[in-house]
Length: 218
Image 1 (cartoon, rainbow, N blue to C red):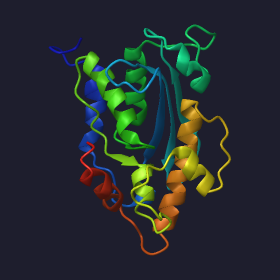
Image 2 (image 1 turned 90 degrees about the vertical axis):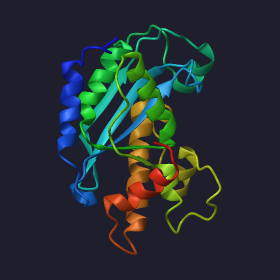
Image 3 (image 1 turned 180 degrees about the vertical axis):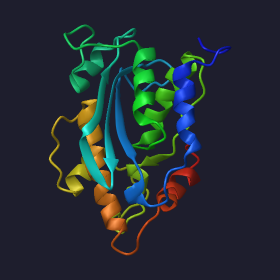
Image 4 (image 1 turned 30 degrees about the vertical axis):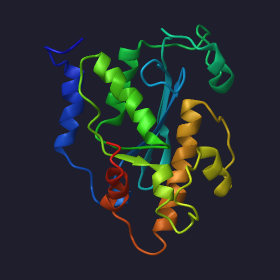
């Protein structure tokens, strides 16, 4: 859509990256996010909602959050029982383009955090591609991978679900399978993981990013 003419909102987004994030975790703005989708087929399925919450100074800022619902061009009734998002309903919905523009404006150059992040990042990137735009420029952390970096992890071959980690850290699973609810749970898991890593040394941002990038997921 925008192949030959870079829109202002994309220019505004990319300007944020002139400033690199601090190496010190308490000085970094993290945006923990989640997407609810019509399914798990990245070639066919679409984003239904995006939920996000900001973490700064290693504290969740509940006043700095985002919740977006996307109009459903493709409807999969089988997944409604999981996420509860109806095709019509009364909730205000944006076009995919409007939702992605709002997401970019919210995240800026924050470090993105998600559980099994490759899927959520890919869904956003595919949406950007449909708009004729490049991929997200943000650095990314995956809580599933980060957990395996802790001394708490006993099986580094296991694919830890968000439910499993919530149970492990004794977190109450309110609003599970809503995008903003899962983002909030992931933020709490993220802070538990960082707290554990901080017991033996003071981790820097690159310590967390190294493991993700080594997996070749970006």
